[in-house]
Length: 234
Image (cartoon, rainbow, N blue to C red; front, top):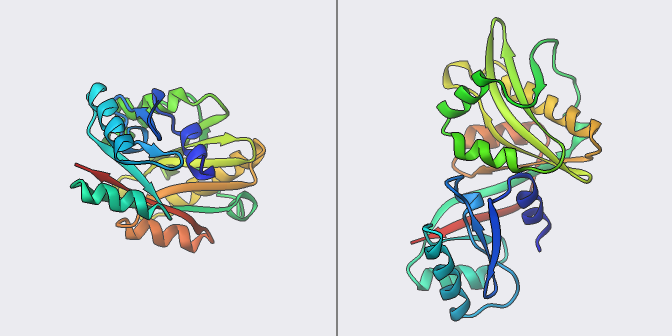
């Protein structure tokens, strides 16, 4: 399995995994595209795609496939079946040591698990509701939520988990009225410090190409693009 895909599955896990032909099927239970998309494992044919579609139908899920960089054959096969591109994504990575310096200021970011109720409210305002919080609960390894703070109020939330020497950050959200105050940077640095303390030497995250502000932020922190993918759906 692709190493990045393995990291995604461990730090943002589907409710269940199964096989249909050459494809891994994810049961998302409403947790979003990443935990609901099918991915190919090796050579495939039209019958494998049909088997994956049938398996997703049986789960009551939309026919949805994740296409990683270099999987042009799968991309072409899905396009020929009428699938359209959805949400091109890039994966960024950087050494935790790079991201951990300089350390965020006092009282600007905290690690919290389980999340406070107010953190759940902020996530919900950003479209990260109970089904995605259930994804966080399913993570088996070291994990924490990150809470950002500006003077007198909470300013953002994020989630990070560690698998061996790699960490991945998910669900970073700063309310629009609190952006451009440094909260995202402070939370990123706090996440890197926490990850480093739990044995991670690299921190990864996924972001849509369309999110120009986030892409600019991650690039400014010295993160580099190491993988890309998009979805194809009916």
